[in-house]
Length: 166
Image (cartoon, rainbow, N blue to C red; front, side, top):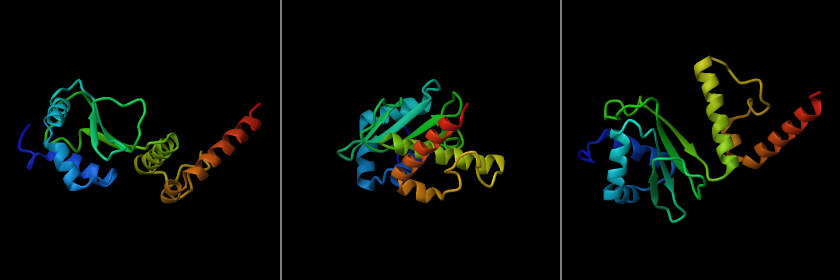
Protein backbone atom coordinates (compact mmCIF):
# COMPACT_ATOMS: atom_id res chain seq x y z
CA UNK A 1 0.00 0.00 0.00
CA UNK A 2 1.10 3.61 -0.23
CA UNK A 3 2.72 5.56 2.58
CA UNK A 4 0.48 4.98 5.62
CA UNK A 5 1.13 8.49 6.92
CA UNK A 6 -0.44 10.06 3.80
CA UNK A 7 -3.02 7.45 2.76
CA UNK A 8 -6.44 9.10 3.00
CA UNK A 9 -8.12 5.69 3.21
CA UNK A 10 -6.18 4.74 6.33
CA UNK A 11 -6.82 8.16 7.85
CA UNK A 12 -10.55 7.60 7.33
CA UNK A 13 -10.40 4.15 8.95
CA UNK A 14 -8.35 5.51 11.85
CA UNK A 15 -10.86 8.32 12.42
CA UNK A 16 -13.72 5.81 12.39
CA UNK A 17 -11.93 3.44 14.77
CA UNK A 18 -11.12 6.29 17.12
CA UNK A 19 -14.65 7.71 17.11
CA UNK A 20 -16.76 4.55 16.99
CA UNK A 21 -14.60 2.03 18.84
CA UNK A 22 -12.61 4.42 21.01
CA UNK A 23 -9.32 2.92 19.88
CA UNK A 24 -6.22 4.72 21.15
CA UNK A 25 -3.56 5.96 18.74
CA UNK A 26 -0.97 3.41 19.90
CA UNK A 27 -3.36 0.49 19.27
CA UNK A 28 -4.18 1.86 15.83
CA UNK A 29 -0.49 2.28 14.99
CA UNK A 30 0.22 -1.33 15.99
CA UNK A 31 -2.77 -2.51 13.94
CA UNK A 32 -1.85 -0.48 10.84
CA UNK A 33 1.80 -1.59 10.99
CA UNK A 34 0.88 -5.28 10.80
CA UNK A 35 1.72 -6.93 7.47
CA UNK A 36 -1.43 -9.09 7.62
CA UNK A 37 -3.61 -6.00 8.13
CA UNK A 38 -1.86 -4.15 5.34
CA UNK A 39 -2.46 -7.00 2.88
CA UNK A 40 -6.13 -7.36 3.85
CA UNK A 41 -6.85 -3.63 3.61
CA UNK A 42 -4.99 -3.44 0.30
CA UNK A 43 -7.14 -6.27 -1.10
CA UNK A 44 -10.31 -4.53 0.05
CA UNK A 45 -9.31 -1.21 -1.47
CA UNK A 46 -8.02 -2.61 -4.79
CA UNK A 47 -10.35 -5.53 -5.54
CA UNK A 48 -13.78 -4.36 -6.69
CA UNK A 49 -15.44 -7.69 -5.88
CA UNK A 50 -14.61 -7.37 -2.15
CA UNK A 51 -17.57 -5.27 -1.07
CA UNK A 52 -17.35 -5.20 2.72
CA UNK A 53 -14.80 -4.59 5.42
CA UNK A 54 -15.54 -5.05 9.12
CA UNK A 55 -13.18 -3.87 11.85
CA UNK A 56 -14.10 -5.48 15.15
CA UNK A 57 -12.75 -4.90 18.61
CA UNK A 58 -11.88 -8.17 20.37
CA UNK A 59 -12.48 -8.64 24.11
CA UNK A 60 -8.71 -8.13 24.51
CA UNK A 61 -9.04 -4.67 22.92
CA UNK A 62 -7.30 -5.54 19.63
CA UNK A 63 -8.65 -4.59 16.23
CA UNK A 64 -9.52 -7.51 13.99
CA UNK A 65 -10.24 -6.90 10.28
CA UNK A 66 -12.36 -9.16 8.10
CA UNK A 67 -13.85 -8.86 4.63
CA UNK A 68 -17.22 -10.29 5.64
CA UNK A 69 -19.71 -9.78 8.43
CA UNK A 70 -18.92 -12.20 11.26
CA UNK A 71 -21.81 -14.40 12.44
CA UNK A 72 -21.27 -13.31 16.05
CA UNK A 73 -19.40 -10.46 17.65
CA UNK A 74 -17.89 -10.39 21.10
CA UNK A 75 -17.38 -6.61 21.05
CA UNK A 76 -18.11 -3.48 19.08
CA UNK A 77 -17.37 -3.17 15.38
CA UNK A 78 -17.88 -0.92 12.39
CA UNK A 79 -18.28 -1.73 8.73
CA UNK A 80 -17.43 -0.13 5.41
CA UNK A 81 -19.44 -1.34 2.42
CA UNK A 82 -18.69 -0.28 -1.14
CA UNK A 83 -21.64 1.42 -2.82
CA UNK A 84 -20.66 -0.25 -6.09
CA UNK A 85 -17.93 -2.57 -7.28
CA UNK A 86 -14.95 -0.26 -7.71
CA UNK A 87 -11.46 0.42 -6.42
CA UNK A 88 -11.31 2.65 -3.37
CA UNK A 89 -8.82 5.47 -3.75
CA UNK A 90 -7.86 8.38 -1.55
CA UNK A 91 -10.09 10.63 -3.66
CA UNK A 92 -13.26 8.53 -3.52
CA UNK A 93 -12.94 6.83 -0.12
CA UNK A 94 -15.47 9.10 1.60
CA UNK A 95 -18.05 9.05 -1.18
CA UNK A 96 -17.73 5.41 -2.28
CA UNK A 97 -18.22 3.77 1.12
CA UNK A 98 -21.22 3.32 3.36
CA UNK A 99 -20.10 3.25 6.98
CA UNK A 100 -21.90 2.13 10.12
CA UNK A 101 -21.31 0.61 13.50
CA UNK A 102 -22.41 -2.73 14.85
CA UNK A 103 -23.14 -3.40 18.50
CA UNK A 104 -22.19 -6.54 20.37
CA UNK A 105 -25.77 -7.41 21.33
CA UNK A 106 -28.85 -7.80 19.12
CA UNK A 107 -30.57 -4.96 20.99
CA UNK A 108 -27.67 -2.60 20.26
CA UNK A 109 -27.77 -3.66 16.61
CA UNK A 110 -31.52 -3.00 16.46
CA UNK A 111 -31.07 0.44 18.00
CA UNK A 112 -28.39 1.24 15.41
CA UNK A 113 -30.66 0.16 12.55
CA UNK A 114 -33.61 2.13 13.92
CA UNK A 115 -31.52 5.25 14.36
CA UNK A 116 -30.03 4.94 10.87
CA UNK A 117 -33.49 4.47 9.34
CA UNK A 118 -34.83 7.42 11.35
CA UNK A 119 -32.00 9.68 10.23
CA UNK A 120 -32.38 8.50 6.65
CA UNK A 121 -36.07 9.37 6.69
CA UNK A 122 -35.40 12.75 8.24
CA UNK A 123 -32.48 13.70 6.03
CA UNK A 124 -33.31 12.13 2.68
CA UNK A 125 -37.10 12.31 2.69
CA UNK A 126 -37.39 15.64 4.49
CA UNK A 127 -39.58 14.26 7.25
CA UNK A 128 -39.49 15.95 10.60
CA UNK A 129 -40.02 12.61 12.27
CA UNK A 130 -41.09 9.10 11.45
CA UNK A 131 -44.67 8.70 12.62
CA UNK A 132 -45.22 5.01 11.92
CA UNK A 133 -43.22 3.78 14.90
CA UNK A 134 -43.85 4.55 18.60
CA UNK A 135 -40.13 5.11 19.27
CA UNK A 136 -39.68 7.67 16.49
CA UNK A 137 -40.44 10.70 18.64
CA UNK A 138 -37.75 9.75 21.14
CA UNK A 139 -34.41 11.48 21.37
CA UNK A 140 -31.73 9.19 19.82
CA UNK A 141 -29.39 9.79 22.77
CA UNK A 142 -32.09 8.57 25.16
CA UNK A 143 -32.68 5.44 23.08
CA UNK A 144 -28.99 4.65 22.98
CA UNK A 145 -28.67 4.99 26.75
CA UNK A 146 -31.61 2.75 27.58
CA UNK A 147 -31.68 -0.30 25.32
CA UNK A 148 -33.77 -2.20 27.85
CA UNK A 149 -36.47 0.45 27.68
CA UNK A 150 -36.52 0.31 23.90
CA UNK A 151 -36.62 -3.47 23.99
CA UNK A 152 -39.62 -3.40 26.37
CA UNK A 153 -41.38 -0.81 24.22
CA UNK A 154 -40.81 -2.87 21.06
CA UNK A 155 -42.18 -6.00 22.76
CA UNK A 156 -45.19 -4.02 23.98
CA UNK A 157 -45.80 -2.67 20.48
CA UNK A 158 -45.50 -6.18 19.02
CA UNK A 159 -48.10 -7.52 21.49
CA UNK A 160 -50.39 -4.55 20.84
CA UNK A 161 -50.20 -5.03 17.08
CA UNK A 162 -50.81 -8.76 17.42
CA UNK A 163 -53.95 -8.16 19.52
CA UNK A 164 -55.35 -5.49 17.21
CA UNK A 165 -54.87 -7.44 13.98
CA UNK A 166 -57.92 -9.41 12.72
